[in-house]
Length: 403
Image 1 (cartoon, helix red, strand yellow):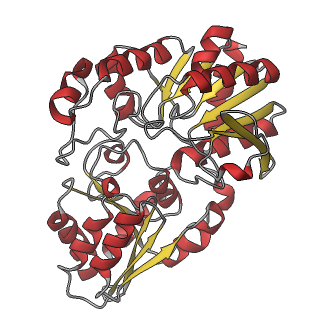
Image 2 (cartoon, rainbow, N blue to C red):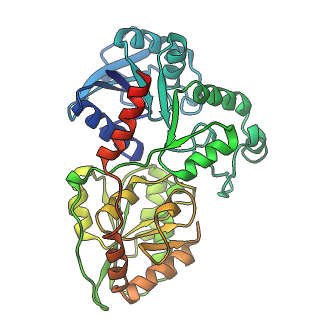
Image 3 (cartoon, helix red, strand yellow):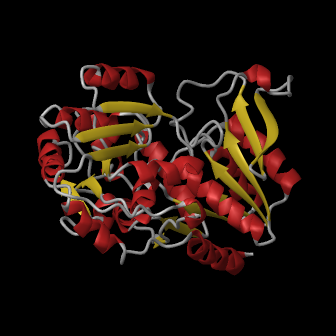
């Protein structure tokens, strides 16, 4: 069968959780003998696109054996990341879908590519949607109000109008409902994300947990003594809702030279500059920049505990998957998809969301007695993250039931 995958950004331009999920899925489905192509939005310089006489520019390339079609507006609308309806993308999508003639479309993220979903509806092309975050029910995408308090849901738009003062949100929610209602299947990687969607839209959501490609995973078998130095690790996007500043605030409360912190990733320039300034006087904190999946085995041999300090619900970050599969315990905020996998005191620690003092207390426990990690690592040896093969088997059954 021929399957198209829609995602808001893709490698090498975008390389975080949803992009990894799509890349891993596409590679496995392609390996199983199916024709695949990723369709994605790009913010690259319009001069790098070969088409010259159109409002929608496009180009094709191959990434690690995966064919990709990238497109963009000639002049990107400032709110293109918000709207679920775009006539220019809709018209372009109909042309592309007619040309590609797919048996099925799998939506990995609808941001900026929702016009393709609407074109699927018009052309009667079946599609499924994997909900990897809260974008369809939240304009901000993260269920976090401007005052940094968690939101419990849009409440048919009332909460958005009251707390975020967003106009037109009811129409957007109607468009989101239409996208989900017309999908053959709605899927989510965590019970929490599924429950949030069902609460707002009363639409059934099936859970398929993200699988892990163990080919690039090497388990960390380090054993700790009471006086060892330990290295904490953060990997992911450097944006405010990811809570990296909490790690730096917590580090300031720990007066010990037996602690190191490695921060990997890139992101919002303003926020990145801010956390660099916060950490400037602390030589224990190292900013390591961009990393790829190929770097994972080496990185996880050099660190001892992962920190996922998100101040939003978080769906279920692949960084956490990778750490646990590598035998690395984790310290995570106590809400959302993260709390599904970390049992406090068993395979890591949870701490109160947004509370740097609570995070510092957990970090101090490990710095004071690193041998506590031995208990967590022993428990992780009995903790199995699903394989990518198991995940793709579940998706393949869904594909076959539709086509």
